[in-house]
Length: 328
Image 1 (tube, rainbow, N blue to C red):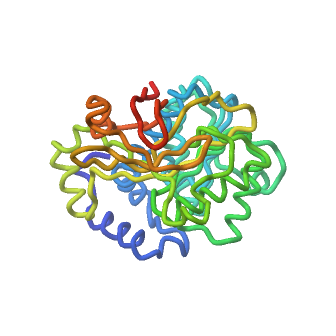
Image 2: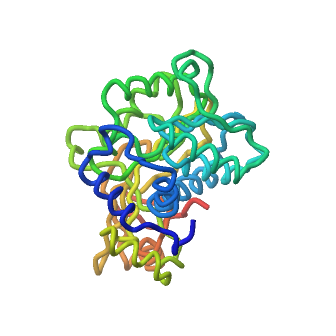
Image 3: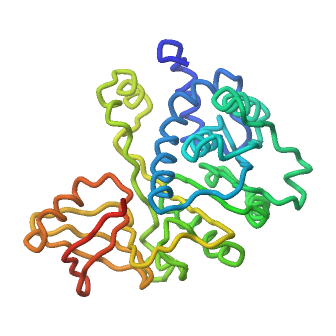
């Protein structure tokens, strides 16, 4: 799919479905062309969020130790394709895709087969989804806003069967807090790899943190801002291409990489003339921290320009940070 072949009316219709909530009422793909137009634009933006998550996982020394992938709620299949490409297609033998739309499953399987010709690709059967066979890596992307309660209950059962899970969602308050709650429920069967740097209860679910939510910002490729096609897409879709908020959760049934001393900045730092402030999460809980410009001008400046992942080892006294080393 190239920009000259895009059907802007199709993109407008899809966008309207996303905004109105009609996408949650059933499959909204009318043709394979719908999926192709979506995959080249909206799905590509989702892919940039996946790139940010996968980069953080690699910096934190984690990789799935299984050779099969299930992409549940696959859409055009962008999540599984990004995941397999990041860890290397040689690391996997099989990809199964599932979506409530048969068209989406067909498109996702074909796209993955073209990109990874040595990979065994097919649709997940009802028997597999409803059975008890172990699942290797379960990949989930942008589904919570569309899931009825019964489907979410079924998804929880799949998580319990999975060796590992990578889950990426929009970084809205409601969706992120729902994902935080799923994290708590999953502690009975899995260890948390990310975004958390600890295995304790989620500090953002404390009553006094009700207004906060676990979200981050991905950086889109810099070249898109000089690309007239992406500029036109952003204007027509009413999207700020600079802003890619996301929430994510990575689980592993095996031990997670050691994260001793690591902290994660939630959201992004706020800069003022004399200090940078941010919500910090680590093994001790969540807290508002500050880096004063006069204490560490270089760190103050770096926080303003950091593109993530915002994972650090701090030197601090109380809420005042004197120095910090970024992950990677």
